[in-house]
Structure formats: C-alpha cells, structure tokens
Image (cartoon, rainbow, N blue to C red):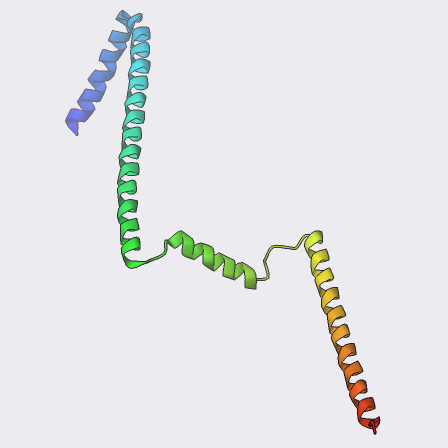
Length: 141
C-alpha cells in the first residue's frame, strides 16, 4: 500500500515535468495510439472471422454426421417434423389462414352444386316410388 501511494505521488510529479519538456511528442503519441488501436481492432476482427469460419466448418461436419444417422435409422429431420406439426396445428386452430373471396365463392358454388344434386336425387327417388305405386295398381291383364 505504501509503495502504491509513493508511486502515485512521484508519478504525478514526473508526468508534470515530462509534459512541460516534451509537449510536441504528445501529438505523436496520439497518432501512434490511434494506429495501435486500429491495428488491435483489425486483429480482433480477423480473429472473430477465423473463429466463425471454424465453427461453421464444425457445424457442417456435425450436420453431415447427423444426416448419416438420420438416414441409417430412418429418422425425420426436426424441421420436417415441426413443419408437419405446424400444418396439423393450422388445420385445427382458430388462427388458420383466412380465405380469400375467390375461395369463398368456389366453396359456395360447390355447396350449391351439392344442394342441387341432393335435390335431384330426392326428386328421382320420389318419381321412382310413384312409378312403382302406379305400376302396382295397374296390372296388365
């Protein structure tokens, strides 16, 4: 602790003396400091790029290994499973995709056709029943 206090007291006085004698060198130090900082940032950026590339390669290797296991055991990829689950969820959920007016019109036409065919079938069945009743009453002699 005493050494720290002594260094602080003496260091401040020495810096004051140095600053008074070599004021021009301080500007050069700023340029050197800026240059050193730029170099340091460049080295950090390059190191980060190397790290990302290394991790990308490792992930590619892992994925090929995973795919080999999936193929061997017939397992679907997780993304495919999630897509299937999403489709099932969308089909049964309240938040499903809203239908466009064209889709609604097509469905209405299909329903009309269904109603028409139902009506047609009921009329045909009633006509056949009446025919059978008439034939039953009119016996040819």
